[in-house]
Amino acid sequence: MKRELKPDELLLWGKVAQTIHPLGARPRPGVAIPPPSTEPPRAPPPVAQHWSPKPLEPGRLRRLARGREAPQPSLDLHGLTQDEARQALTRFLLAAQADGRRAAVVVTGRGVQGDGVLRRRAPEWLAEPHLQGVVAGVAEAHRRHGGDGAFYVALKRRKRG
Image (cartoon, rainbow, N blue to C red; front, side):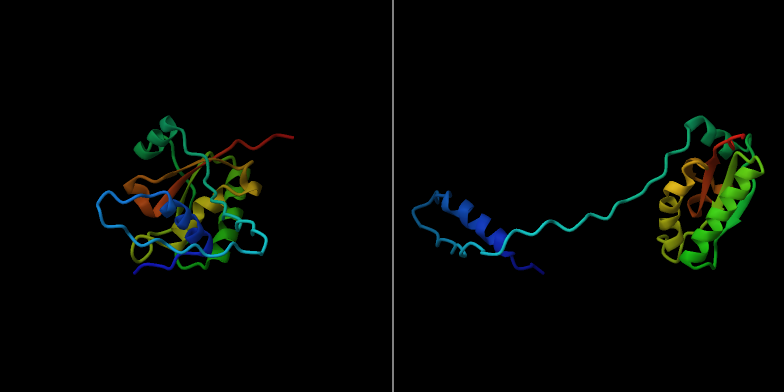
């Protein structure tokens, strides 16, 4: 189904159509140009900012996937609402860092059709400013740790002081 052209698109198309000349002997009907709008141009709506956390270092990802670096503890977000999951994730990561942990597994699940809300939103939450001092990197977990329904989260060392 085609959508109708907006007034500014019609204006632009009209200008383009005036510069076109038919190749054949048959002339084509012109496109009517709408009168220019008297209202001031609107600012474009703000674009939703997409957060993405820093990727996990390749060597560290390999060590986690092969089990050479223990990605414990783990947090399972199944059955939680978005707000509950976000709060639980923040508490969990702060506690894990305070315990001196260097990596954790966050299980979000895949969702019914592989596009679960928690799976989509968790990387955004991990990239939020209040977790910048905690999260060093994020990557999809190996199959044995939950596969595409889980994330490895590398934790930064806690600052002493």
